[in-house]
Image (cartoon, rainbow, N blue to C red; front, side):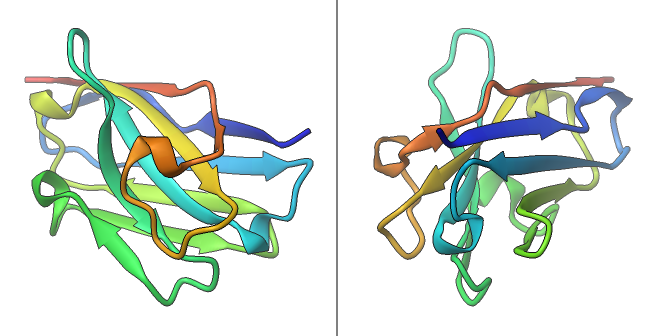
Length: 124
């Protein structure tokens, strides 16, 4: 059974940085494309970033371009999302997801496995 567990969320101030981590267990992490999504209250889940199996392909949503860096460590079965210059509108639950088949999926329906989410709250 594949399980994903996010950590690193919390309450920060506008302009701060934080790094989210997601550990994958029970599967072959190195064979998965990995993605980050977020969902704010009353809004649909939105794509944030994705990274291919070998880190050769990376995609970002326009609203985090230049402020976020996705990376992965296949030896640690972990994917990271570094976010800088945080804004109050970045407040959301952040989810990591794994896809078994596609190179660099960017829509939620393409992903096979999901974590429970980590709350990120940015105060102004």
